[in-house]
Structure formats: structure tokens, C-alpha cells
Length: 318
Ligand code: ZN
Ligand code: ZN
Ligand code: FE
Image (cartoon, rainbow, N blue to C red):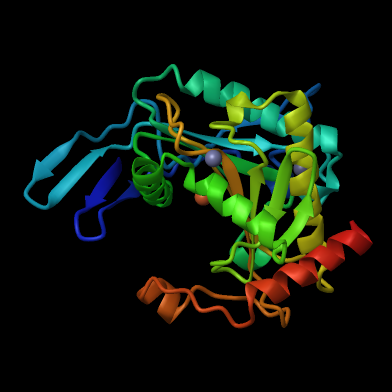
């Protein structure tokens, strides 16, 4: 069974997959992402592999269902692993050069462009999980792409509020939020030529950093090479800061919020969100009772303090 079930109470999709292929994914403990592994070959700098444990497949065995409150659609889509470098010895995306990071995003542009031709795929979600503490066991630098038959809930919520704001003021809410942060300056952690990184006023995770283009750029695919280099520079600074802030690298989740693969969204622009998961004390922040059970985040310090810590770390050590 590979399907997406609709929760009509929380109004969001849940991916359900019990596919368990027997795979030579990690034969005798060797790294499946290193050059020369069964699926990787040689001569690449960035590699997109189909995930062998997919939550979504091109031809799912399930069919749609609509029986009262029980609604599901087949889990039609693709799951990719993005092997960001052939070098196993690197720890994080921030250990790659700016050019190498830009090449990862250039690869994503091409992949998204391909995926946009598939009418069954609505959204491509790029994300990166980092840190053993949040369950990442394969250390070879990699991220993932889920090509989904629906818009994921968080992105949909953002799109709804951006659309409402646009309807009433004819302005981009994301641009206005970024400009307010730039004007305040208090929470800006790094400003480049065409991208800026800041801890938002309403940060939820302790070291939550949003990376936005300085001009309104609708989607990742609209960025040219020099913009990609600047995005890479900005993200590299942020991730380097997270890595060096405490005596051990901070676990984080990074995600790209691009608009859906097809259509025009002048009221929404592409951005990256990073959720650094250590509190200012250096202890791991869990999404526990209030967060998971109530959907309300609690912040133990202030976003202003976190931003200053991260900014000073970036300035002196990255
Ligand atoms: Zn490896
Ligand atoms: Zn905008
Ligand atoms: Fe977002």
C-alpha cells in the first residue's frame, strides 16, 4: 500500500507506505552514496538517486477511495536522494565550496523542471535532515526531494495567507516580512548581495533561520547562476554558524518553500527555512506537548538573542 490519506479534521494529507523492498542498500556497512557503490558509479559531482525506500512511487498499487470521512489517493510521485558531493569525509553542506552548493541547487532546478512535466506531480519538496540526534544515520552529505501529488500543508498555509494579503494590499507578504526584518536589522544574521538570512520575529525553533532573495523571485528555477552562488554563500554561512555555535554540530532541518511546480504565483516567492534544534543553552529542543499536542511552539529565549549569537558566530568563525 502506498497512498495519501486525507485528514478532514486537521485538513492535511498523510503519506502511508508499507513498501519494504529487500535492497542491497548498505552491503556490509559500506556507504551507498559513495562513488563506485552499486547505484552511484563514478564521475559525478552531484547525484540524484531514486530512493529505494520510497513513500511515493510512479505507479502505486493503491486506488483512490472516497467513503464518507475515509478519503485517499494513490501515493503517486517520486522520492529522490540528493547526494551532494562524492566526498564521504565531509560532514555537512556547509563543508562544500560555494560553487559546489550552487551546483546542488542547479541540479534541483533541472529536476524540478523535469518533474513539472509530469501532470500527476503537483509539488517538489526539497529538504535536508542533519544530525544523529534527529535520526540521520547516513553521514555522507545528502538531502532529499519528495515529488508529491498535493501541496504539503505548511506550504499551503503559507500560500493561503500570502494570497489573502495580496488580495487586500496587492503586495507580497513574504517581501514585506523580509523588508521589515531588514529595516529592523535586529534579527538579520547575514546579508549577501542578493540573499538575506534572518531569524524571523515569530521564530518557533530556537535557531530558526529564513533565507530569502532580496528581490521578489517566484521560484528556484528563476534564479541565474550568480544568484545561485549568492544563495549558496548565504546558506553556507548559516549552516556554518549552526555547526560552530556550540561544541558539537547542531542538528537541523532545512526545507525549500518553492511554489507548486506549475502555475503562476506572483504573490509568493521562493525561500529556504532552517530549523536549528539546540536551545541557546546547547540542549536539544523537542517538539513536545505544547508543540506536538497543541501546535503551539514555546521559545525559551528570544529570537533576538538567538540571532545575535548566530550573527556573531558567523562573523568570527565562518
Ligand atoms: Zn559515502
Ligand atoms: Zn515576494
Ligand atoms: Fe516558508
